[in-house]
Image (cartoon, rainbow, N blue to C red; front, side, top):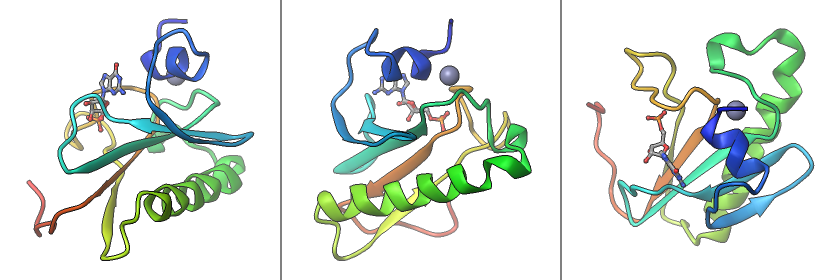
Length: 112
Ligand code: 5GP
Ligand code: ZN
Protein backbone atom coordinates (compact mmCIF):
# COMPACT_ATOMS: atom_id res chain seq x y z
CA UNK A 1 0.00 0.00 0.00
CA UNK A 2 1.74 3.14 -1.16
CA UNK A 3 -1.08 5.65 -0.85
CA UNK A 4 -0.37 8.46 1.62
CA UNK A 5 -3.98 8.93 2.70
CA UNK A 6 -4.53 5.16 3.06
CA UNK A 7 -1.53 5.19 5.41
CA UNK A 8 -3.07 8.04 7.42
CA UNK A 9 -6.38 6.13 7.57
CA UNK A 10 -4.48 3.05 8.79
CA UNK A 11 -2.67 5.08 11.46
CA UNK A 12 0.71 4.43 9.86
CA UNK A 13 1.36 8.13 9.25
CA UNK A 14 0.36 10.59 11.97
CA UNK A 15 -2.23 13.29 11.34
CA UNK A 16 -4.36 15.54 13.53
CA UNK A 17 -7.65 13.69 13.18
CA UNK A 18 -10.70 15.84 13.83
CA UNK A 19 -13.55 13.51 12.82
CA UNK A 20 -14.06 9.84 12.04
CA UNK A 21 -16.88 7.42 11.41
CA UNK A 22 -17.23 4.01 9.78
CA UNK A 23 -16.74 5.35 6.26
CA UNK A 24 -14.91 8.68 6.53
CA UNK A 25 -11.99 10.33 8.24
CA UNK A 26 -11.06 14.02 8.55
CA UNK A 27 -7.72 15.49 9.52
CA UNK A 28 -5.82 18.76 9.38
CA UNK A 29 -4.03 19.59 6.14
CA UNK A 30 -0.24 19.65 6.61
CA UNK A 31 0.02 22.88 4.61
CA UNK A 32 -3.04 24.94 5.57
CA UNK A 33 -4.32 27.47 3.03
CA UNK A 34 -6.74 29.08 5.50
CA UNK A 35 -7.01 29.33 9.30
CA UNK A 36 -9.09 26.14 9.15
CA UNK A 37 -8.06 23.62 6.49
CA UNK A 38 -9.22 20.03 6.93
CA UNK A 39 -9.27 17.10 4.54
CA UNK A 40 -12.16 14.63 4.49
CA UNK A 41 -11.42 11.24 2.95
CA UNK A 42 -13.21 7.92 2.47
CA UNK A 43 -11.53 5.02 4.30
CA UNK A 44 -11.88 3.11 1.03
CA UNK A 45 -9.23 3.94 -1.55
CA UNK A 46 -10.83 5.73 -4.49
CA UNK A 47 -8.31 7.49 -6.68
CA UNK A 48 -10.42 10.51 -7.58
CA UNK A 49 -13.97 11.62 -8.28
CA UNK A 50 -13.38 10.39 -11.83
CA UNK A 51 -12.89 6.85 -10.49
CA UNK A 52 -15.98 6.96 -8.26
CA UNK A 53 -18.70 4.63 -9.52
CA UNK A 54 -22.48 4.92 -9.23
CA UNK A 55 -22.32 2.51 -6.27
CA UNK A 56 -20.20 5.11 -4.44
CA UNK A 57 -23.02 7.66 -4.41
CA UNK A 58 -23.94 6.99 -0.74
CA UNK A 59 -20.27 7.27 0.24
CA UNK A 60 -19.94 10.57 -1.65
CA UNK A 61 -22.97 11.82 0.25
CA UNK A 62 -21.42 10.68 3.53
CA UNK A 63 -18.26 12.63 2.70
CA UNK A 64 -20.26 15.81 2.08
CA UNK A 65 -22.14 15.30 5.31
CA UNK A 66 -18.85 14.72 7.18
CA UNK A 67 -17.46 17.94 5.65
CA UNK A 68 -20.42 19.89 7.06
CA UNK A 69 -19.91 18.27 10.47
CA UNK A 70 -16.21 19.15 10.41
CA UNK A 71 -17.02 22.77 9.50
CA UNK A 72 -19.62 22.97 12.25
CA UNK A 73 -17.20 21.51 14.81
CA UNK A 74 -14.58 24.05 13.70
CA UNK A 75 -17.04 26.88 14.38
CA UNK A 76 -17.20 28.09 10.78
CA UNK A 77 -20.62 29.70 11.31
CA UNK A 78 -19.83 32.55 8.90
CA UNK A 79 -19.26 30.13 6.04
CA UNK A 80 -16.65 27.93 4.49
CA UNK A 81 -15.59 26.37 1.19
CA UNK A 82 -15.53 22.70 0.20
CA UNK A 83 -13.16 21.85 -2.67
CA UNK A 84 -12.67 18.59 -4.53
CA UNK A 85 -9.68 18.80 -6.88
CA UNK A 86 -9.82 16.12 -9.58
CA UNK A 87 -6.97 15.08 -11.86
CA UNK A 88 -3.86 16.97 -12.93
CA UNK A 89 -5.58 20.05 -14.32
CA UNK A 90 -7.96 20.06 -11.39
CA UNK A 91 -4.99 20.51 -9.07
CA UNK A 92 -5.12 17.06 -7.47
CA UNK A 93 -1.75 16.08 -6.00
CA UNK A 94 -2.71 13.14 -3.76
CA UNK A 95 -4.44 10.32 -5.61
CA UNK A 96 -6.95 9.38 -2.90
CA UNK A 97 -10.26 11.20 -3.21
CA UNK A 98 -10.55 13.99 -0.62
CA UNK A 99 -12.59 17.08 0.15
CA UNK A 100 -10.88 20.21 1.39
CA UNK A 101 -12.81 22.16 4.04
CA UNK A 102 -11.46 25.71 4.15
CA UNK A 103 -12.62 28.50 6.43
CA UNK A 104 -11.77 31.19 8.90
CA UNK A 105 -11.25 33.87 6.26
CA UNK A 106 -13.20 35.27 3.32
CA UNK A 107 -12.82 33.15 0.19
CA UNK A 108 -12.36 34.61 -3.26
CA UNK A 109 -14.04 33.80 -6.57
CA UNK A 110 -13.05 32.71 -9.15
CA UNK A 111 -10.52 30.34 -7.59
CA UNK A 112 -7.06 30.13 -9.13
P1 5GP B 1 -4.83 18.09 -3.53
O1 5GP B 1 -3.77 19.00 -4.05
O2 5GP B 1 -4.59 16.66 -3.99
O3 5GP B 1 -6.23 18.53 -3.76
O4 5GP B 1 -4.68 18.11 -1.95
C1 5GP B 1 -3.74 17.35 -1.26
C2 5GP B 1 -3.56 17.98 0.08
O5 5GP B 1 -2.89 17.08 0.92
C3 5GP B 1 -2.71 19.26 0.06
O6 5GP B 1 -3.48 20.36 0.54
C4 5GP B 1 -1.53 18.93 0.95
O7 5GP B 1 -1.10 20.02 1.74
C5 5GP B 1 -2.06 17.78 1.79
N1 5GP B 1 -1.03 16.85 2.24
C6 5GP B 1 -0.01 16.34 1.51
N2 5GP B 1 0.73 15.50 2.24
C7 5GP B 1 0.15 15.48 3.48
C8 5GP B 1 0.46 14.78 4.69
O8 5GP B 1 1.42 14.00 4.78
N3 5GP B 1 -0.35 15.00 5.76
C9 5GP B 1 -1.42 15.86 5.71
N4 5GP B 1 -2.13 16.01 6.81
N5 5GP B 1 -1.75 16.52 4.58
C10 5GP B 1 -0.97 16.33 3.48
ZN1 ZN C 1 -5.57 5.62 -0.71
